[in-house]
Image (cartoon, rainbow, N blue to C red; front, side):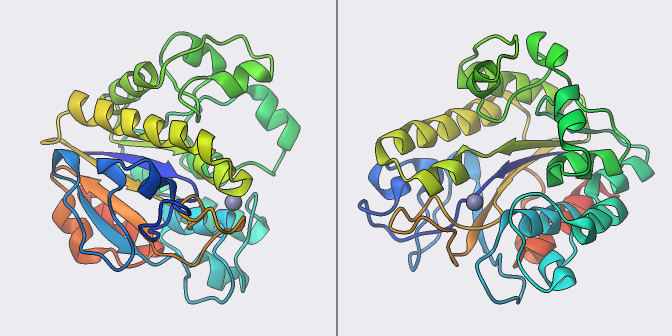
Length: 292
Ligand SMILES: [Zn+2]
């Protein structure tokens, strides 16, 4: 069994209010779950499990602690005593180094891939201040995918089009979201555990530009439709989850206290249904599906 984890930054379960919630305004069958409503069955037989992101720590959930919890199964906010935004602190880096899913994958002789391309420039520039995703990958000792991989169609970029990298003057081709999603589907067929990170949802949740939000919803739909029609759900479990709410509520510029969706397609659904109530439960569920 393989697992593809689609980590989508800053998406909670919000109200069915088109004024506030892009998922209500630009209705999408993949994001048809709303607060205080029965849970729908998603296209391709997906289920949605409302998931607590608060880790029993007061304050608004944030990215570095939330992502560390997702990728390690540890209560990162309690370890720190607060929610942490931005990049992992030394305490969070220690949790990632000790307990990253990629490390467990490696220990069982399986293959883990972070599908997003990273540049040498990224590591040179940031030193220790790299993202939770990159740190989680490195804790497993797996190589990162490069700009060369991206050019050759063996890696993807977080925006699924490469526009951000091109704006930063990287020599990479423009791709459509469907082309990138096909590449992602091919990557996950060669690995046991594949992680993809999508961050525009958190960025646009903070920026609150509703007209652009429609394009983000469409991009996520294309990603899911393409991946779920390309891969074999008999041997691959696809999981989409988030670290905290944000994009589902344009009435505030901050993150939200909303539950986040953990959406699951494929053979491992029951394992997630039985185990997932909180962000910290996701890594153990993935490990169980992968038999780590
Ligand atoms: Zn944010």
